[in-house]
Each structure stands twice: as C-alpha cells, then as structure tokens.
Image 1 (cartoon, rainbow, N blue to C red):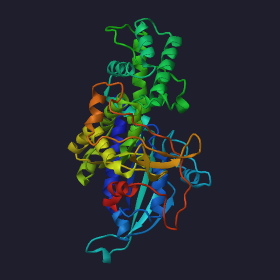
Image 2: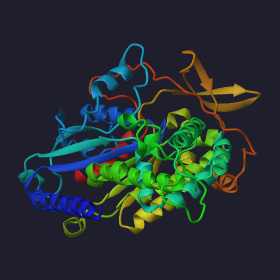
Image 3: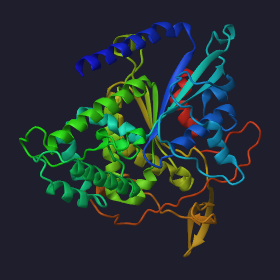
Image 4: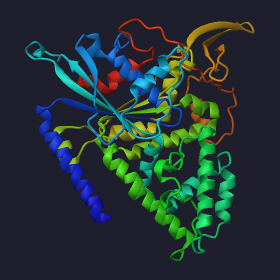
Length: 471
C-alpha cells in the first residue's frame, strides 16, 4: 500500500509538472468542480450555467461579457475519454419543455467542456488576438466529497463520531442500540456483518430524507457496481479495547480501511486532485426547515468538507513543487427563489455564518472564498399579499406535488444568524420563535428572448467569482 501510494503521488506530481511547464504555450484550461449535498441542485446549476454562457443575455455581472470581450462559446468533446459526458442536452430539454420537470440527480462523476473565445483586456489587448479558454466542468456527488474526510480518520474515531451523531437523528437510536448490543470481540459472522451494514444504510437514508447532511460513507447511499461487496459491508461499532484477530471488530476495521484505499483514494487521485476551482451547493433552506439539529449537522459538515481540499494559490512555483491546489471555493445557498428578494441578504449572512470555519481554514491556506445566495433556475415570481391586516412578501410558483399555482410565505429569516446557529449548537429540538417552511416548486415554463439563457438569481455573480479572473 505504501509503494502504491508513493507511485500515485509521483505520477500525479509528474503530470502536474508537465502541465505547469507547458501551460504558457497552450490554451488556458479551468477545471471547475461542482458538488453539493442532497437536493442542492447540482445538475440544474451546471445546465443553467452552460446555457447562460452559450446565450449570455442574462450574464451582466460577468465582467468579460459586460465589456463585450466574450466573442463566442461552444461545446466540445470532453478531454477525459473514460469519464461519462454530462448529459447537458437532455437536462436542458427537461427544464425547457412544454411540461418542464427537474432532471435526474447526480449519481456518478461526469464532465463537460465548454470553450470560450475571449478578447484579452488591458493596454496591449489591441495587439493580441482572441484567446481560447476551456472550461472543464466536473460533476460529482456531494456524498463522495464527504468521504474524503475519512482519509484522516481511524475506524475507531469514525465509529465514535457517527454513533454520537446517529443518536440525535431519526431512526438513529435504533441502530445505536443494535451496535451496542453486538459483541464485536466474537469471530466474524458474515450474516451479522451484513445485517449491521444494512441497518446502518437504512439509518443513513432516513437521516438524509430528514435533512441531515453528513451521511457518510457516501457509497452506502450511491453504491453503483459496489453494491453487496465487502468494501460496503461494514458499520460503526463502539470501541471494545483489545480485540482478537478475525473478530467482527477487526474485520469491520479492515473493510473500513479498504474502503478508504480502494474507493476514496482513487476518486481523489483521478478526479478531485485536478480541480482548480470549486463550488459547493448547499440547500440551507432545507436544513433550516428540518430544524436546529439538521442545521448544526450542516455546519459541522461544511467544516469537514474543507479537510478534503488542498486549498491555496496556483502560483507557478507552487504548482511545480507542491502540485495543483484549489484556488477559489464558492459556497452557494441554492433555491433563493423560494424567498422574496428582501430576504436574500439574510440568507447570504446565514450561509456565511454556516461556512465560517470552512472559509477561515481555506483563506489561511491561501484560497479565495465567498458565500452567496443564488438560484440556478428561477422557478417563482414575487408577490405581496395582505393577510390578517399585514402585508406579506411571498413567492408564487407551481407546486411540485399538485401542479397547482400557489403563493407562499416561508417566514422571515432572522437578521442575526446567531438566532439560528445558537439553538442549533445548543442541541435544541425546535425553533422557539417560529417555524420556517419551504415548498417544493416545479420549474416554470420558460419564454426567453433570443440570446437569453434561462432566468436565474446571481448565477452571473457566481460565474464572475469562479471564472472572471481568467477571462
């Protein structure tokens, strides 16, 4: 394993050095990683971003577009022949059809290359021809991102952490009771190991449905071809001190380590370690709706996510000597179209507070970070209605469950994020002041002018932060 790790590191370093030495003589390439936790809208974000870069009428906050320097944009075959192509055309068709519907969610890694022809800026721009900039968008499940934090944990540490978290989640106490009743010093019984893994997977599925964020290992929820394999047949167990060889504890520990070495590390090596810029999409409104415990779980998850990155500036010598690092990380609270625009600033402030630990860690390492509230595709319109003698700022849209139009007031978010994060940290079971509600809206039927992409909220600002300095 040590020799394999050294070989992987050496191979990656040689690749990084080659890319660094040849980059001044080739087209600029930006690898943008797109991930997010469950129901955060990764597929919709990529589809809307590509559509709005192809037809840029709604991208006024993208400086290069505002200055008229983006001459054209076109899709090209992706450079990695072994990675599935992001199905942009079918996803766009789902959002723009006569009966629009949300596309299927991300279940594996996919990639798409969008090339931009850009006129340089600056004093010498008149003497230079247009440059080609390739944007390679890499889409991967957020559950896999959480797995990267396992690389620095032992089986015992992970078990203690997850058993504590499970005790505070729906259906979690039942699994904790099952795990504590197990005698892990007894010889391995494959039937019992499978029963524990299945019970743990069910508890993870329930937690995710209830709005909790850290549901790792991620392949338990998205197993793919690994379903039923020993590498996915383990579960957290309470520590027992000294345990004999070939015991249940030792086998669970071995499988946990195999999961890290054979599943997590190859993903890091082949995909994650090559990313330049990253956006992490977060359904903060969903966590608030789920309650204080789900919100605090999201805060802890955001802090854990940064342990997966190698943030820092991609200066020439830094890349040559240390390998590629993530230069910019954007934490985006999605579905801001579920709120009236008067509350978007409050949602941004909550997102900044939720990601404070993560962003401070990244900035210390030299990466630039930002948090904002956005909607990749606007599914609602705003409306003010009178109710009980008071004016309420609402949003109107088509309800996903019934297909009927409805105006909805989700409640006022607090101006001070600590009014939410305080009870969440203290382990409160519910909000004292009011309940925060959300509705599931279907995508609206689109009617766009030629040259306009799909309607959005601050997608152009997100693009400017992630790509603007390279255009």
